[in-house]
Length: 251
Image (cartoon, rainbow, N blue to C red):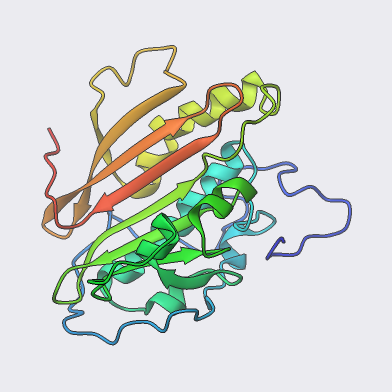
């Protein structure tokens, strides 16, 4: 189900240009700024509907089921930046940042399919279906949010896929090449980050599957973003985790 409507007959990715759909919605820079003073907090209500309206940012794009191309990547990472930044600064609740059409679930049940006895209200998922395998199979992104014992954000991650085996021709070579390039150029630009691994990131051709580590400003410190992607034929999977409690070096 597409959350954001578009005119009849207009494809979500027609004439996509970076910046064309988010005029008037500037990106907060640099990085994530100072951490908010969340302290002991009220935990979100499980099953609560997301209230986040990202239509002004996404324009004709959709976050419910992003396309397997650079525009789909941009939409996921743009919303991820806004979700994680708001939670890190402590100026919005989990339900307020979760996109409309998504719900708040226990992170262990979403990821594992069952709940642990010692769940301490510190691991949540923003999910379309409530189940990680169903989200992956249907092409929905899902976010995992983890807090420390004091209620401050410790990590914020987004994952899409891996879904069932896909037709190897589903994504053409041009779209795949743009998507790979975006992971090395577009994502660091969006997050004001510096790639720290791999050291050969400037060597072409870029790998169709790779683990990338970035350092991003978090106030007076650096946080780490770890991203695993696989855009090989028949596959479409990426996962990024921002660790706010694990300092990174920006050398």
